[in-house]
Image (cartoon, rainbow, N blue to C red; front, side, top):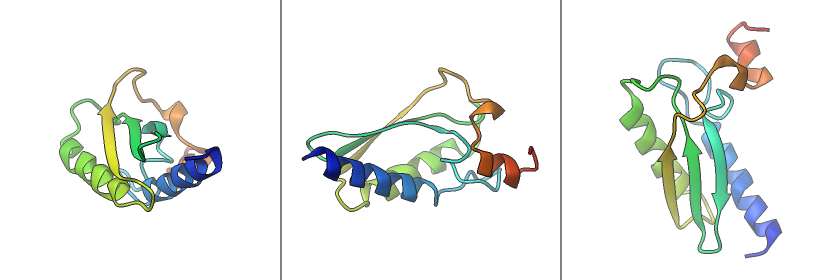
Length: 106
């Protein structure tokens, strides 16, 4: 896979992630800053590292399953390898400007 194809797949994944919303906050998980890394390897496996707004999020499992299912179904992706991390812990500074505006923080 060349760099252009990899970038196209990663861009499609970003679009998919912008369509997944945190169940408790009316903002998508990408703009919330929950996605720390998107990387597609030469075997077309999407490696995604993400966090949650709180370690004890009651909807974590459902959110995880939605990310794995939707990213795994993205054109050019064979499989989604999803990793959860709390390092660094999420905070409001990770919000995009769009999310800050949506939530009234700007």
